[in-house]
Image (tube, rainbow, N blue to C red; front, side):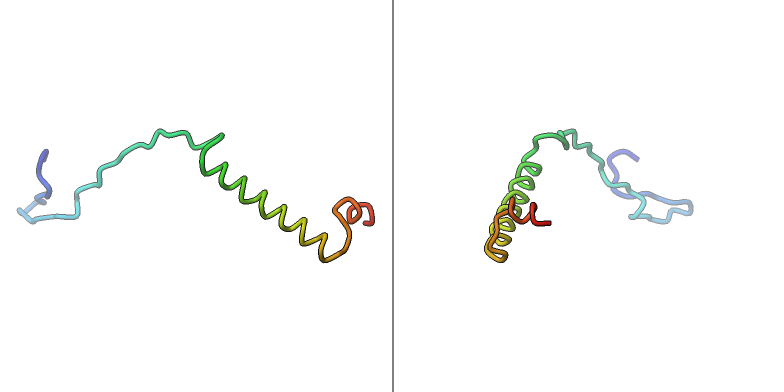
Length: 70
């Protein structure tokens, strides 16, 4: 069956769908300081910073004043 792109079933029926796709293994590092992790970390930091500014503008108090008044 090597080299063929089809499989013959019993009774000489052609079965084009019996071929499995080629598999590959991606052995790149998926944890730690990856490019995606750094982008996500930076975006979350920007969201936090803008939220902190919005909190200060809307309440008229800074973060420390807002936390101590709770």
